[in-house]
Structure formats: structure tokens, C-alpha cells
Image 1 (cartoon, one colour):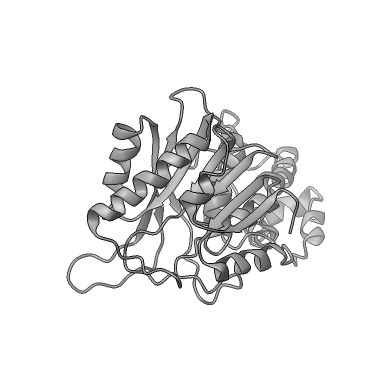
Image 2: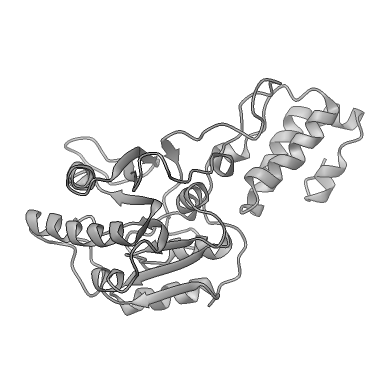
Length: 313
């Protein structure tokens, strides 16, 4: 396992208590939602107030270890998210920043009532103004080229579309609530720097640590189930071939790239900016480039970019 990445078997609260005050730059975690999921050693089924008390205890410890300019992202299901929000803001004095909606196309089927098609992520900071947010690291491509636009991209907003971790995904593990790496990539790139310390108190299948490993962050993850810790350690030893999910907007090529010099510079930058951790998406991006600009690129002698990535012209 990489130096600076630790997967530790233990209770989240007990392990958080071992960390020093104000020692962690970022916390990103997907705690149990109390929906009666089977996590091996424990059934995710507490009484209502028991669950809120459990949440208070681990979140207080999380706040204690967070640096003064640190950020916390918490995945949470619909039933409890408003209570978690209230605890963080009203009881713990943290500052609300964003309520992120993760939209996906497939979810739980219902015949009475509407089928869920999203999960939510709360973003809170320890300080109202002094916190890190690397917007350039998480921008998404513009729809059109305009000289007045920032071609590094636009703010991704607070509604994110990533596919679920379907069982056919090459990276799917035997964990009931595995989340896509693309979600963690965006949060970790936005709210930490290289060599910062990121902690996940409920590491599960190891998504957070895998993303830390590939983005040059230090990471610590806890889980009470030794099978999940072994799963995480095995995952960290796998060959990296790109993250297992991507926001589809990252592959889109802007319209109106008519100037030949601007066009080729943009295409090269797009691959560097948006697809650095997604090499398997480069082909799709260049296929769209070909569809939009092939005639112009033949005329300007720029088709070498297709050859470089195996796109047949």
C-alpha cells in the first residue's frame, strides 16, 4: 500500500478519537443511512433517536480533528438529511456551504410513490470564509467557445450526474453502497491540495482512499468490518487505468471552435484539464471532435491528434 494511505480496521468514533485536534484537511464520508442495509458485522437498523445520537458523536469527533480551514462532505439519505443538517449547523456551529444532489438514472423501483433517483451530499466548512475551494480543478467544459468565456470551464453547480456503480462495472466490489470514484474525485480536488490529509471514517469499499492515492493526497479510512478493510487494501494495489466514473459533460467538445490555432490548443488542454484521470474517455471526446471539426482539421493539417489516440479518421 502507498505511503501516506492507511486503511484501519476499527470503530469510527474510537479511531477518530486517536487523531489530534485540527490535524485533518478534509473529511469525505458515506456513513450508514440507517436503512437496514447489511454491512456484514452490523445491520444498519437503529431506533430514530439512537441513529441521531450516533451521528452526533462521530460528527463531533470529525469536527474536532478538522483544521480551522477544513471542509466536511457527508453523503446522507432523504429520511435523515434535514436532521444531520440541523445538527451540523445549529448544534455544532459549522457553516453550510452546499447541498449537492447526485442524480442517477437508475434507482429503487416503487409502485406507490415516486422512485428515488438521487442521493444528497452536505458540504460544511469549519470557518465561514477561510476555507479551500479549488474551482479550476473541478470546472466542466463550456457548451460553446466564446472569447469572453473562461475556457478552463464552468462551475459544475450543485447537481451532479454520475452513473451508479452497476454490477457490470469493472470496478464493482462486494459492498452494498459503493459510490462512484468520480464523485469523490470532484470533492477531493475541490477541497484539498496535494499532500493534504483526507479522512473517511466509514471507508467501506475504499473509494475515498483510491481517489486520494491517485490524486497525491494522504488518506486515512476506518471501517469496523475487516472484510472491507481487506477489500480496500486489495483495491489500492490494483493497476490504475482511470477512475471508474465520469461526469458525461467532461467529454463534450465546445461548438464554434473555428479558429484553427485556438481549436488545437483547446483540444490538447481539454485532455489535460478534464480527462487527466479518465484516459478511457479521451477516445469518446475525440470522436465528438471528429464529428464536429474533421473537415476543418483536414484543411489545417491537425488530424495528427486523432492518430495519437487511435481514433480512425
